Length: 477
Image (tube, rainbow, N blue to C red):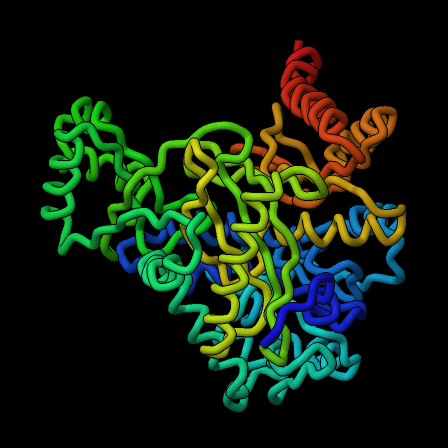
């Protein structure tokens, strides 16, 4: 199974327009711990449905976009003009907040005519990630040219194809931070530049608290991880000072669960904290495993992480020095070969933290699309239509200073696009549906030819978003 540089696009969607399925909440639901109450489950589901708007960037050229929340067509028209797309068929509002608990697979099953049209068109099918519900309807793993639907409609569907079933099993195994750590440990001896953090699996919360307390007494900072988590949920860093201020490790754990930082039940992993700092602290390596099992590198990106919470990424040429980039790619490709041997097909990434000597410590595998995947896809498309050399930065959840309707947000974004354009920066809206939430936000991408322009545009956008509150205050006077 060899690697073909720059071959990821053919391996991913056959170089053709594709169907993008925004099933983020469905994917995440596979890994929710049993101890969550109904409110916690609903918050996780709602966050996933909003993030599913990133489906606009699942491949360089969408043919059909399927989204859970309602999205105005004007957003897609704006992106189509910027990215030189052909006609894009948008189906949104498929799993609205009124349908409590409804996922995208359920929503699609209830629309047999739409399923039949997608199947007949023969486009590659690109979900955020594999789920059993999705495999009851389609087999995205069968290959870009073969949608392979089961009998569409509300009735029972046939069994998933073996390829999809195998890939789903591998996904469920290695999305576990314990299983991924075991794989890292097995692979790392052949990679001198890779440092695998030590990990413990305490048997129950009492033993976990004792181990955290013992580590704190030695002055050690500890990374606490639920076995599964997304975007930083279920992971936190605990210092000896925090243990002391909480009144001990047991009280600290109870507080973290109450604050929904850690998931209740489901076990806890204790991991060595890797001390590091600077721009290259958090890196990601992305790749695609094609239908034939070949692993195709996509690239290395620099993530923005607040504590343990992913905020966005910057990708493009010259961002990561050659040494760390080569180490991340070599290790990530070997992870990919192991995943491929077990039957996984599709997009994956390996995330790293770097120590102060720029050694790489792998922290998790994501067997699905990710925020960085969207940034790499947008970079590829912009290089196609505007020439090579783009840097792309995604800002997945920028806080807004006021709650905005989609139309008001659209007007705001149009103003930002004009102002960023004067800096030589293209602004692409990615997540417009969360602007009227209790904590309103918007997801954007910025594209330029240099990091100074990206930094200036990001500062402009953040300031303008926060200033919205002041504008509405003035109107209320």
